[in-house]
Image (tube, rainbow, N blue to C red; front, side, top):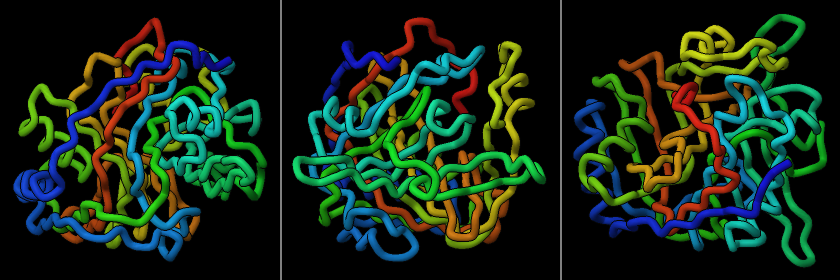
Length: 319
């Protein structure tokens, strides 16, 4: 089972929002023909296209890296099951809204799948609201099958790994990122993260939030329903096991990124996306650089919490 007994907490560098906008815009312009970054009010995230269970991304922002890829490969440790309500308490923010990227609980679903968590965790006198999506390989045709979590399941569990952003779900000031016509090799997330890494150096800056691929297409992967029965020891093994797809906009993505790992064996960026047309999974990069358009909203986290860090680790499968 999950081990919540050794959660590690590290404060992060939180730049002034206006300063961070300037840093990000300068960096994004090296990777996109058009890029603008500004401080603005968070849009109402209960509205289309987001349809989250909360209005905003603000209020005590923090991130967590739960479990990790070493619990999936080389061989799965399927007993690693976590719960969003418990995680919110570990983050010292019971009742938090949590978004990000993770894996479904195979105990709940009876299979493996990509999880796009969107959970307003339980608070005193209020049950949890699970707005998550999950994507699996459709056994009928081998294509992407995206489903709303609450249509099938009634818990707030996840499995193996999760990179999550948590907050009070309140309105407030956030960073708005617009970028289009990609000219460089980096995805939107990698470009932002590497920009912060270059500028802030040894200081760890983390962002969480959501962005929409408004135009274009993107490369994603979905894990097979069955865990690998033979060890996945190399990146090639992992890529051959994963199923890759090209999906269409609009894609609503949730991301967590950290400029520098402060010694916690982090996955420094992880992004999952869903759509209202039945496509979703683990986002890599857009495949239509000449026409792609991104619009995103982000906030720097104040703390990172490392939950159930794997004792035996490796760097394979973290793309």
